[in-house]
Image 1: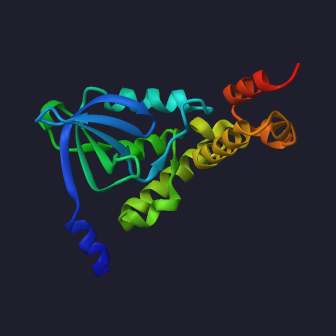
Image 2: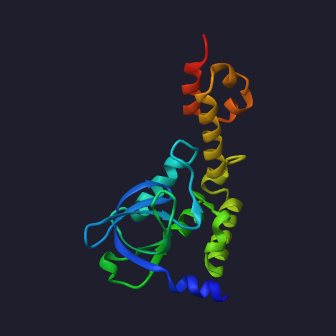
Image 3: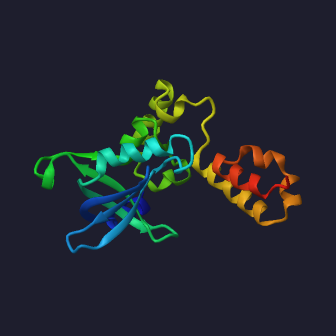
Length: 199
């Protein structure tokens, strides 16, 4: 518990306005000094742009956050230099009223993100519980991506895309020897690979 308390003491706060929504779990925040900060919402993983529900996830986060004042509670950067943090959206302009909306939790409630369990130990116990409960409730209601018979988690989608890219950089013969990999590839990648196949 001491380690957890120490982690909270090192948390930082970023205040600003959301000026861009890249996808269902990444926003750009402009602070009062006009510095742009790319922020990856902690605790969730949203579908990728070319993945089923990727566009809907981005649209939902855009509707929630674009142009809104936010507070980002964070304590680390990812390997791409993005801030990893909890994004709290002000319910009123200029934070004039009490209360905020947790953007990550809202994405989970609508079934437009997964609770990113690989990193759940980085969340407070109460937050971890509420995120897991929100995902479970969305699954039960068949909300958003849970309408699919077998939704593919974004981390699996990215791994498959990497595997396919590695295969595609090899010879055509090597690619054609992996029909199972080709079948699970995203549609846009299958089209690109089909262009490489001999006629």
